[in-house]
Amino acid sequence: MKTESLIAARRSESWREELRRSKKNKERADIPRVKMNELNAEYRSHSRREEVNLGLTEAQAVQEAQRCLDCPQPACMGGCPVGINIPTFVKYIEVGKFLEAARTLKETSALPAVCGRVCPQEKQCEAQCIHLKMKKEPVAIGHLERFAADYERESGQISIPPTAPRNGVKVAVVGSGPAGLSFAGDMIKLGYDISVFEALHEIGGVLKYGIPEFRLPNRIVDVEIDILRKMGVSFIRNCIVGKTLSYEDLKDDGFRGIFVASGAGLPNFMNIPGESLIGVMSSNEYLTRVNLMDAAGESSDTPVLIGKKVAVIGGGNTAMDSVRTARRLGAERAMIVYRRSEEEMPARIEEVKHAKEEGIEFLTLHNPIEYVGDENGRVCRMLLQKMALGEPDASGRRRPVPIDGAIETIEIDEVIVSVGVSPNPLIPSSFKGLEVTKWGTIVVDESSMRSALSDVYAGGDIVRGGATVILAMGDGRRAAAAMHEAFGA
Ligand SMILES: Cc1cc2nc3c(=O)[nH]c(=O)nc-3n(C[C@H](O)[C@H](O)[C@H](O)COP(=O)(O)OP(=O)(O)OC[C@H]3O[C@@H](n4cnc5c(N)ncnc54)[C@H](O)[C@@H]3O)c2cc1C
Ligand code: SF4
Image (tube, rainbow, N blue to C red; front, side):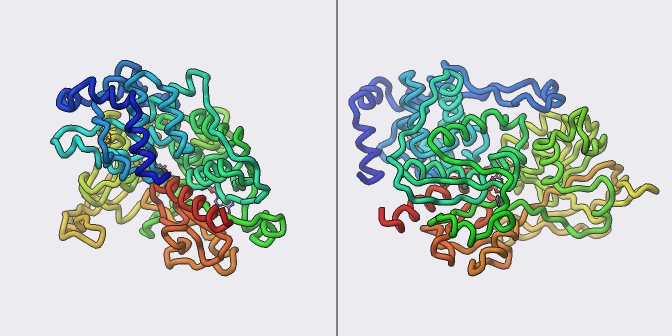
């Protein structure tokens, strides 16, 4: 059955029809949008591991679900890169069938508890919700997704999605971030023999080494990975494809298809004076050391530098995670330095709001031009060029232009540079025959995610550059469907 017919068939089930009749659309639309429960801002700004968002109560979730109009053509679904049947899971919540809601999520998403926490719903499903046309706030789809996934996990009644009988076809996945996990989830359901090769000692990619515990606890990611393991996915850690195993080795081992999901883990710098001083590092290094190596722990063998006056350069999610981590590690002054205005910031609105509540300073329209060191070579000062907004550039955002002679000096003892990432060059350079862009991303056919090598597909940040969890997952799903078709499904 086609997706539209499936959506219509589920919508016409008698319980859904009755539910729609039980309340007028106007009554539903007049219910105010739920507010996420959160930890107190002052308390949480000193607590590195406790999650900021606390989730919804059952009563809050049911009330929020009542706001959904169960539209005949649910626009919200058009905004979801993995195609979650949004009204179906929301209506299950409205009638208190929380486990059914979680099962619906898992039909198309391998990581619902993750997505419910970190996806930019305000730019995706929620941005398409019909409520916006009525000048109302959209249904809190992300909060409800988190609620259903958390309910299932906490109830101890975790369902393992059904899988087809094994077909004996071996497929390799390079990288265990959201793109690789989503691809693995779909392919194992279809009966393939899936091995995920991960360079690090932990599975999860950025979900584990990038996004901090206070936003996405590792135990939540682990539960979703464990479901994939129970479905039959094999995970091989500490294995760098392109070094430990080559493309030819994988083919010799009988892998008929390879999905490359190796991400964009190479930090960019600005190439300004002073970037090699002690105390200046990339967000990647800072967050990986704190999150994956516990370098801020008391007994760490490789402790990370802990600054009191910390400047984080950039305005994306990675910058917000870094500055909020610095605050939690004891920074008295933790600052975002961003060359455009707040309006152009790519970070999620929620992250900016939380950062401000936690006492983070925002130096917008400021751009660092030099870092100065003390006699020991440790950064002690930064020179900031003040900026104004000019005409829009190619990205549609107004271009920041320097204001002549407006330079400010600020005392600091740590700088975290968070101005974007580039793809890791290992796979593009070691898989001979791949087509690669000037930015180092792998060229694929957009609909199938197939590369110039007919048995190699790719998706996520290695194709897009730094993007989002849900776009990476959507790529994984598209690649799985296309590879399945190519194998003569
Ligand atoms: C700090 C931070 C915060 C973010 N916050 C958000 C957010 O709130 N919301 C959001 O939607 N997005 C966010 N993002 C972006 C998002 O996490 C990424 O877009 C997403 O993780 C990309 O998924 P991926 O699977 O392509 O790659 P990754 O998650 O990067 O995973 C790639 C994996 O491949 C492994 N690998 C690399 N090379 C090899 C190799 N040769 N052999 C074997 N394994 C290899 C890596 O070790 C890694 O584990 C954030 C990113 C960062 C860094
Ligand atoms: S568009 Fe909004 S109201 Fe309509 S089905 Fe989706 S979430 Fe519900």
